[in-house]
Length: 216
Length: 272
Ligand SMILES: [Zn+2]
Image (cartoon, rainbow over all chains, first blue to last red; front, top):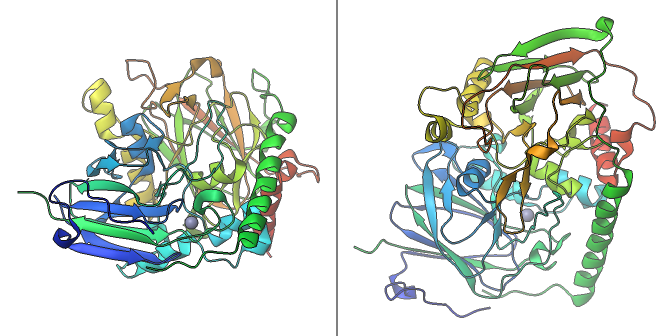
């Protein structure tokens, strides 16, 4: 895996207030407070990191892929993107991106959609929506709260014809995104277990999540 | 944290399987998808009309629809985009899922012959007729803020319309899925920017959505956020609910792709 890449003088490992390693295929959640900076690191490269955000004070306000695309006027997420809620409010702002492009059109894998995409024989494979349901259930939510997500480091080009495919990830070991929280948010991650398409290079790998306090 | 890589043989086998799926999925579309449905829209046998509703510009409506019935959504009085959401009537946690719809069919461009999926790997609608092929799966509808930025205050928007119709159905804002907007000619350019392609629209455009499960369907007749018209001018949209008709063995939507076939197998199993 990669060495830690420092992106600002104050953003050192010993100053991080949270530092989590998330195993390949595992779910994860944590609170990120307003003003804090969240880093999601693709430690080994070519790993899709399926991510949702909820307002930590009111989970019925949550990430909206459609509002986020509409407000950017663009289908992909990159540095400068404002992460928008279903109430049209800015949840986080992407302040750094070493990769360049992230998907929010293709959603999370599920046992059910895997049967449609790859055949009924793939039903009994662990999938992101099961991770999401397990993780949001810890916070009193259920399947209806699992909405279209961001796929950090996943490459899903959309052609002018509308054609879309999931192609090999473009992230290298250590690639990262950083997001500044504009409200207290519940971060929920499914470190995607998908092995049927190239989103993980057919080999899901561990990731790292770090949080720093805002600079005074 | 350590990571034990999968074997090169496993990786190669999975990649080969994906590339085979991708080739079949992408090669299908240009060959087999039919031309757009003819204009003007053909008349509907009055004996088959269960209900006809005209949604004024800016307003919302929801209806129950039974398996096999068809909804004709038609611009009979001029141009308007109209947003749509849907829930399984028997289990409302199952709902419209556009990210799966575009992913499993390898395209964001819905048109005649395509289907629309729920989050449970089942088909909710078949697109049995469609004169435009110009529908937006990505951006959703308007909000109070998007309207205000463009037109000023006090105009009805799709977000609030969906909260109203969901709440009247006993649901709440947690239940509102990402919306499909019909007659919104959105495409994505090489830089990922959205563009409005008016050349894809025609006077009198219509679409037929055949229900493949019993559903609650919600509509909001509000301008799309990218509509270049600087004036808020949604025209009335007519929704006609048409009685179920026999479905042929070789029905296009049921046989068009391997993905659709498997989706309908999931429907059939759920109905046993
Ligand atoms: Zn996944």
